[in-house]
Image (cartoon, rainbow, N blue to C red; front, side, top):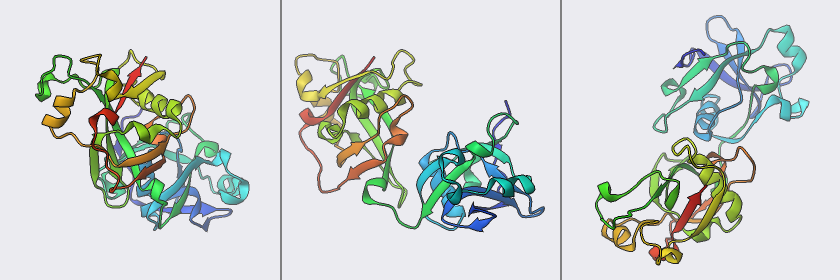
Length: 284
């Protein structure tokens, strides 16, 4: 497997359809500034922050939608005959950009090994200069925490377990700020089963014994089960606040994780205050 390397950003990035027509919606094309040779980006394993930076490099601000060529109508992607005539094939994959990155220069990628993707699975983006309110924030981390001994110091907390009080981190796609706090149980009610499944699936790498199955309730329902979540005393004593999430929807499916929670409504005026209303999840 090729090692990750700095991405070949001696290339310009455009979004193209048909026979190389620039657009806000189309196949992502890399053009080497020296040779003018064109190439494509593999469309799998790209998160929304990295997609935003690709759109920004193409002259836009945000990635409104991500897909692969195969799933897009012919009129909205680079023409197959044009790619064949010009020898345009995928050249990079696995673009990984830290959340602190403001441009692609801070990202790394992996060279295509000849089997990992092709023109059908090349990256397709819909870019724009604005995003809807429900797409302005993304969930970038989710941990489950509990203090089984009742202690209130950080070392008394079991983090990243397969069950516990949900602590999430949100990232603003507009200004790069972060918010971390408790998830209100009311926020998942649009589809609690799918939302908590997505959260559990995001925990699979950190907790190999957990799966995508989930059980959830409010912290208030755990009062007779000490040690299964963060205690009221810990939450108050450490000034752990709620995230201002009013609703969210992550979708349903075997591959859905918190990266897919695109319909996430945040209102800074809607903070919850009662620790009993915090979300608790058991992943099993």
